[in-house]
Amino acid sequence: MFDRANNGRYPLRDTEGKPMRIRLMQSVGSSHRHNETLSKALVMPYVEWEGFEKVAALYDDKLAVTPFTAAHQKFPEETSLIGQSTVVTTRAIRKGEVLGVYGGELLPAVIAENRHDPYLLDVFVRLRPEDRKAGAPQPKQISPYLVLSGDNVLSRINTLFEYEMGKPVRQAQT
Image (tube, rainbow, N blue to C red; front, side, top):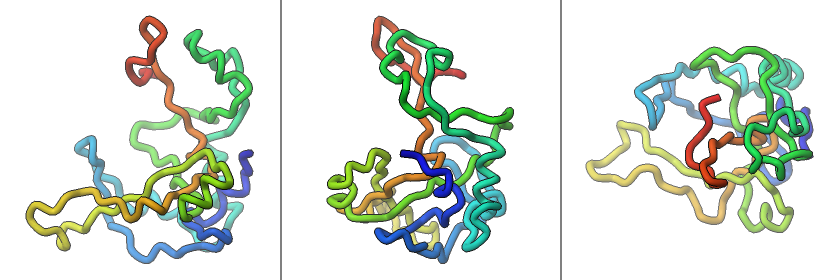
């Protein structure tokens, strides 16, 4: 069940829902798939220690969780999605515009599995360039027993696929 209040909460929390302060963030981040960079200043409005409603409003300006309907369906294979939640944009999104920060609880996988948390991500760490040694493998999973259980609007975004002969073959263009 999606709770809009989670959009305004600090994005990284422990098993009791208490904020886990982010102490260090790169001033410029880079995409690992594209040759693009992103300033930390664009992300910081979503990482507020206080001001929950202000942060939630940033998400509301761009995204909304709504039930998936036949109107959203692009392919017959998506019939099974009808009635589930989907995320839609509330306005046009510019290329490169920050949507927010994936938020949730950092917790042991066994807790997430017992609670049947549906939106789980493995947690990886990348070394800072100055800390890297020649040949060091990247990225490295922090722990196979630790997951991020997503609960804000970004955790609800689905990927749309194009199908050929009933099988997904690529991510949809729109």
